[in-house]
Image (cartoon, rainbow, N blue to C red):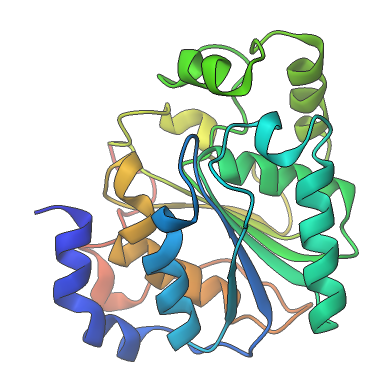
Length: 239
């Protein structure tokens, strides 16, 4: 059963079980070559849970061609949303979208409430993703060029913004090892069962996102799966 089929079957129960929101803005960033249509289901559920979930409105995610050579178009989008709502913005980024979300957290921490990444290879400095060549074609850049090397170096710098990295060992596109956080305060990794292309519609992922977003601002604590959820969240340290 695909993640989308499963989601359609469990939506009522998922909405009842998930934490409710406080109305703060959540910007959802799509993955490589995807656009806002790919995140529509996730945004729709977040709206029902009480968030001001927004599309990124930058077309298909073709890397620098979408966000600007230096990320300026995406930074402007976040800045405008924060000014419009008068609140910090939470960022939920799928795959490459999560890489960009982490980049913004380092550049504009005063605007960002927290970052949640879905199968995002932000720790990759080589060939840990099967989408590398697609990224080069879509972005018109090489992974090892000056701009991308600078971005990777920037991602390695510490950030004060709380972040949650959701990943799956059965991802199939990105090596799960480079989609996890290093242990540190206000950083965590959450493992789920699922595929890379299904993370944005995976019920377990959506449950975890809702739990993370529902935390009061400034009161971040690590994710604790509920007792009934062993089928959804692998036990820490499993093989």
